Image (tube, rainbow, N blue to C red; front, side, top):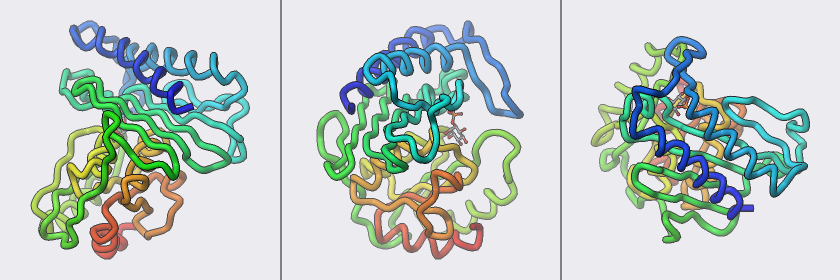
Length: 259
Ligand code: IPD
């Protein structure tokens, strides 16, 4: 199943790379304020769904642009959670930070994850219990144990979000770490945490397809994902803190007032 997901992600990347040469020709629709879909998102999603359903016709689908298939529910034995381009706004502008994200959920648990970054040709994969990998090399979260030594990432999301709350969270965290980056792709930020390129990530108001694959990468790389309260239903809640274990605890202490 992981190999099928990799195949699907690479097909989507072919569609994305072709369009990335001439971003002025991309057809853009605003779903809600500052939340966009392009014809490329739709074509990439179609390539992914076709690839997955050809191999597994009975599997359920939850995809950002086309929604949930009729057989998708919490009890679905196999459900694919798909974001054809995470970082659509970046993609539209030619800002080189976006990815394809595909996760498999088995009876409510994410068991396979693929994130493909077509700009850097970075392929992140994870299978539950078998570790996380970047281009087939094992990856692990950082070992930093004090927040003062960390580089964090955060996002304030698209659409009518609580910008004021984000700015307050940003201030609380920025005063206590070495820096906070906000590069517009939650999935890639989670992959960065898994690969030890950053120590932690926080964002509220996300959707399951922004987090599903990245959260398995983080946990398989030895990190922790949770809601701001520390609870574990972040995929439903949409609010996530992901970090190496010691940093996670310190982030929860500071961010739980925003839960
Ligand atoms: C978006 C990205 C972004 C996050 C937004 C998401 P999309 O996903 O993950 O980093 O801040 O909330 O909607 O729309 O580009 O797939």
